[in-house]
Each structure stands twice: as structure tokens, then as C-alpha cells.
Length: 153
Image (cartoon, rainbow, N blue to C red):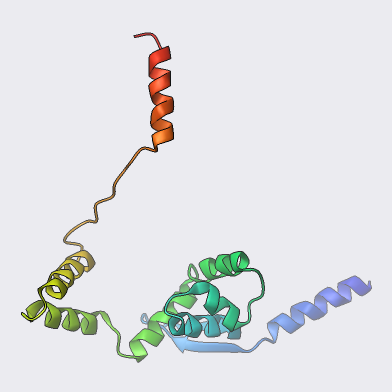
């Protein structure tokens, strides 16, 4: 029986953890644990470094474990909604970024920056697709050549 009581105590302790609530873009109230809230804040502070954000938020483990935790956290809609909420609070919205890109595109002083701005604008707008190279590993190519020599024609 003592194990059962211990387990029940852990469940009660978990249910009493403080929650942070905020309203997301669609108007729903979203709840986060304190660690999840801190992860979102530190994720922005450390400029997208999930391992550092997880460590600073209080998660424990090796860098590999922290990386996995960060990966899982960034797949949770309530955490990504909170990160978007923080960005919006700081004034970083799609509209503000479009305005900044427009300034870069319309300027004539730095043509390299202008070209990069146009490329980024087109990529974000879905006007162009990034080209992906599908290369074959040299070792695989050598194996395929040997197999082709062995097989009858």
C-alpha cells in the first residue's frame, strides 16, 4: 500500500503545479506549466537555441536529452502559440516584417541586401520554391556500378 499512496501524492502534486494562461490568436485561453512558459521565453532569449532554452527553463539532462525535450516542446501547439504571442507582444508580426522587407527592397544603396530581401519576400510569400539537390552518395554509386556489372544485360 505505501507505493500506491506515494503515487497518489505525486499525482496530487502534479495537479497543483502553477499554470500560466494567455489568450492565443484564435481567442482561446491556453494553459502552460511554468516550465513550458519559461521554455518559450528562453527560446526567444537564446535566439532559437532549444537546448539552452530547455536548460534555462529547468529541464535536466544531457545536451541530447535537452535537444529531444526542445524538439517535443516545439511540437506542442500551446508552446508555439505562446512564442507567437511573445513575438506579437514585441511588435514582430507578419505585417511588420513585410514592411521592413519592403524598406530593404526599395532602397538603392545596398544591392546585395536588396536582392536578399526580394528573395526572402518571394520565399515567404510562396512565390518560389527552394531547390533541393538530390545527390547520390559516392559509395552508393560505386556499389550500384558493381551490381550493374554483375547483372546480365
